[in-house]
Image (tube, rainbow, N blue to C red; front, side, top):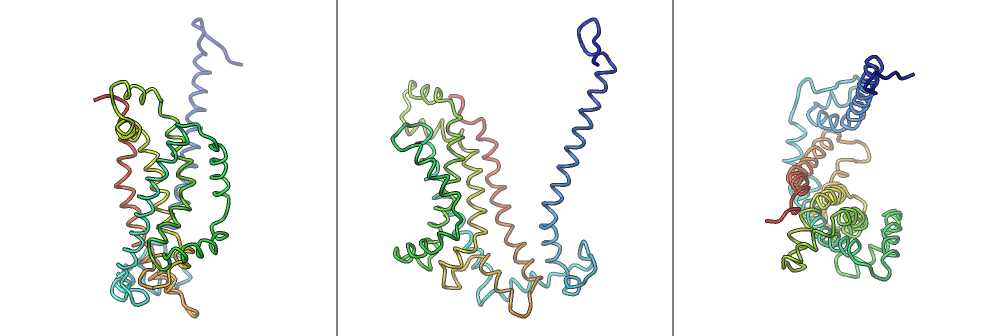
Length: 298
């Protein structure tokens, strides 16, 4: 039973027990967060450490948490020998073109569509939103054959542009739904104040709405970049020339019928994660600065 003093506040002993409970609760949540973090990071750490292990350490049955005798053999071999007769830089360039193209085109279309859905009332608006959800529920593999036929009829087969178009189509529904929430959260009074000050609709969109929606645009851009960067099935189906392969498709050439070159796979996969980290570091500042930009005049 809780006791109170003359001022109506909990007695000291009860208040102290509440503080201890809060501390124990925070400690439990922090411990759980650390366990989840380690569980998520361990595969990445194992990939990086395996890239620098010798062949004997990779195939040994003993548990070796880190390379005792680090070697650059696998990394050097990936750079010098390449994959399927092409340099590893060619595949990294192809993946970068596809991922950046998906981000840029998807950002434009998703922002305009999200603004229209959030700010305007038109016939079929609800049906359009429901259709976006339905598209998200359909697995990409079920759309593989019709998309292949459409890309081939459009003359985009075996071209990186065709792969960009498909990736944009696959990531656009999620991006529109996420950005719609950000646009709807921006008070419409800010836009009306800009109109009263004489700003045009485009100036209001660019100087008021866009900075406030920038964090959501960055979040969707990260999602689109990672999705396009790691995509394998469509890249394998829509690209026939080995010189146009992306990195996920190129990695399969390290697997043969008789053996698997784990050292080269881990080395190439480690190199493959670097552009994603660089992209995140470049856009994460915009995610923070966009939270307060555009909300004031001047």
